[in-house]
Length: 87
Image (cartoon, rainbow, N blue to C red; front, side, top):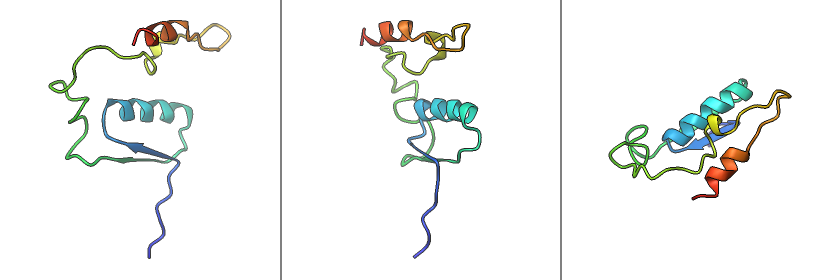
């Protein structure tokens, strides 16, 4: 039996959320290894596909424009929480 592959992060699904999370993780942890698994034939072919996306909004949990950095380097989450509470 072969040794299982080791990875720091396993991303399940090749949609926009995995793409966004992997980009953010690469910025904060550039040395981490990442593995992406997808059961469909390609990336962004299910919910992230424009024809399948309802376009009804989101909870603002992963968009940096909703979480600006303060001058001291901390993150202001007030706007993200406000948007999130609407969904």
